[in-house]
Length: 156
Image (tube, rainbow, N blue to C red):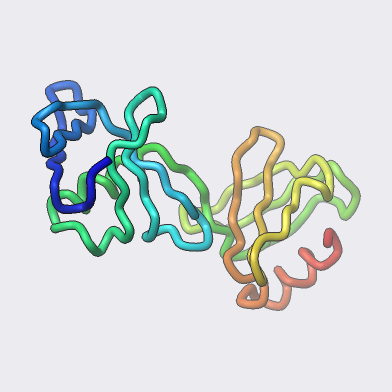
């Protein structure tokens, strides 16, 4: 396993992230966040396709700009977790219900199958799974507008 200073990263001709360790051996690499919600920029493992750890990165800020950009772009291409900024309306307060929401990626609708699909995370954070398996994040439900909080409170 390598530290953050004794490896190189680049993309091959197929766009795959390639890790080269201090021994000169090259491996396809995938970044994996240890704490994707609580500390997304800290604790990132670079693993091979079989899940074997190649390197541990304590913090993205520890990497030089080029390696940080490669890791961040790979993470972004693999992760999709829209952040809910506002709840416009719900079709019903009984489940299943269709929610019209505004996320950091635009306005959309999700179908909530049941209240059990809303999971409480640390402090004020919530994770909501829709009927298609997409995970939506509310980082701080207290920071939502009053209308959104009122709707959300009916499901909690």
